[in-house]
Amino acid sequence: MNVDIVVPNQTRYLRLIGNIAEQIAKELDTNDHDPDMLAYHLNLVLTEAVANAIEYGGDEGPDKTVKVCLSIEDKELRIRVYDHGQGFDISSLPTPAIDQLNERGRGIFFIKNIMDSVVYHPSEDGNVLEMHKTLK
Amino acid sequence: MKLETQTHSGQVVIAVKEERLDAHNSSELKDRILRVLEEGGRRLVVDLADVKFIDSSGLGALLSGYKNASQRSGSFILSGLQPRVRSMFELTRLNRVFEIYPRLQEAISSHSVT
Image 1 (cartoon, rainbow over the protein chains, first blue to last red):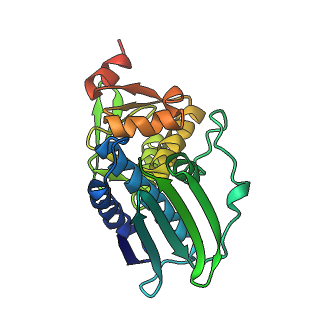
Image 2: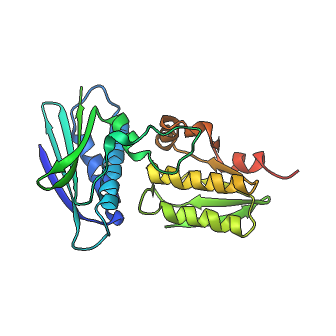
């Protein structure tokens, strides 16, 4: 299954993206995950990734978009989220420390916690946050 | 964003009447908390009973409220976390930072002036 979604570069569409993620989660064939928790987790991953793409993609505007590509093949879930901003170094992001109480910096932490692998790199379509998870 | 602010037993209760607390609306909650503090509120309860989904920016808005209240020697507590929402606090260990009550009434009575 392949699903490509293009939404305007505006946070008001996070709810839509999250709802789509939850619907896709319900279609997944997996024994090792509580369906409701998997739905929440996919909602969270897509919400965080698209919110990052909007933030790093520069100013919000009707002509700017965020592209999300989901694919599921043989229990392999792959999610790619593209942005056209200047990018960031994903490896330099620290794990949030409980004693520092930073208001930011937990989005990628959530994604890394939920997905099996996360990489961020330039591509022909802009920067891409590429996430992978094996469903058992 | 739908936020309801009421005073109960000397405490200001901000009820988040939304299913999602995310990067789209969390700054409004952050601003409302700050305004309550600037207006002199010192004992705040944020009721999340209607919230089914929270992301990192929602947690950030609550942390901002906690820090701003602490700086003013105020109290800042949470109530009504649904299980999925609570799991996000546990994943980030923020359940050790916030004082959390299952229900609003328990949060109010725990900090009532006697």
